Image (cartoon, rainbow, N blue to C red; front, side, top):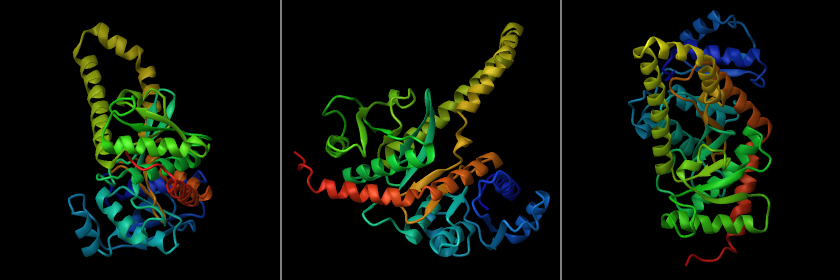
Length: 342
């Protein structure tokens, strides 16, 4: 109910996933029943047994403070969705609503897995050679080295199960690739990840990376704290929009020859937009919880919602949570033998 494009677009995305066979046993749509029924009629799914409605009378607004919202609006669609995942009625939950409220509801209602201290928000980004995963994108701004180690294990599991990489390359974001560069947090995390990957191929840690390496295909999973990750995320989104807008302005305001050139490269621009399309994976998973929850962008289209349902179904079938749990427990056990920080 908190999506920018309204109920109709969200229902259309669910309908698309159902028709494509990407929704496992079906979809439960949580929110205002009357609006959902009208939208289902428009999609020709009013009587389809694969679609169920769970009525919720309240909505968490984008302007609401996360903790206050989930405590005062107990019948909000976002809160009810998380509860459906907790009780096992739904295998996964997807929301386009208030990010902070979704993370708070996930942490408080679902709780983290045994051995996991903090959940992480992971986002899939395009690169020159495909895609990479960045985490944490904002769930935990005040991270410790052990948290970042957990993020590496979580990202490793998600890259295998959702992106299909057999041995993802893990990089730790810093201000230089030389030993000793960066903060105390990155230095200690670097030592721990080196230790974990030294004699076991479960984790393919390639070392410290700099900002310019994010998009050139050097790594498949980028690990950082939630503060840095969120700054990188918002800055990159703004840069992409700025470049796109400037390009459009130049083509429109320049000479006839430039306009002709713009027409000639239009197919290439279209191909580029498809390669960079963030809706391919549809949502950012909140990893480390006892249930599968994806955060989709507030302005998600029906294609993004359909893709989010596809990814959610895929990671459920491939038992992502079990893989995350096993990998984190393995790391915790190994870290007991790690050398103390100097």
